[in-house]
Amino acid sequence: MATVHIEHPVRDFKSWKAAFDRDPADRRGSGVQRYSIQRPLDDPNYVAVDLDFATDAEAEAFLVTMRGVWASAAAASGLVGTPQSRVMRLVEHAEVS
Image (tube, rainbow, N blue to C red; front, side):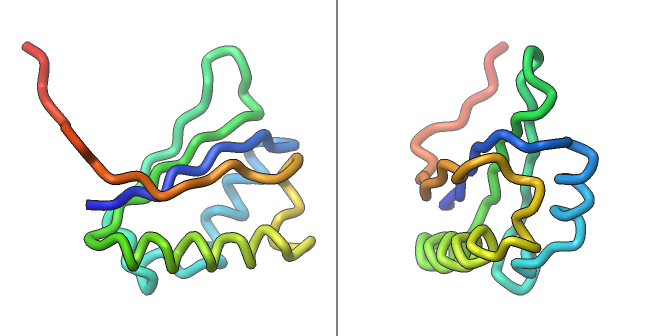
C-alpha cells in the first residue's frame, strides 16, 4: 500500500473542505481506496490528508495530478502557500493492547 501524505495551512477550513468535497482530482477514478483528514488541536486552519492507494504508481500519478490542481488559482484558492506532499509506503501498522 502507498499513501499520499499532504500537509498545508488553509485560509478557512470550511471553505477548504468544500473544495476538497468537489473532488477536482477525481479520487475514486485515480485509485484512492480511503482517505483521512486531520487537523492539529492548536491550529484549526491547518490540515493533513492521507490518501491510500493499492500501488506506488497510482499514488505517484495522483500526486502529479494534485500538483496541477494546486497550480490552478481557482482550485487552490483556500490554500496558504505550497502544500508539503510525498508518497509514503506503509512499513508497519499494529494495534497496541
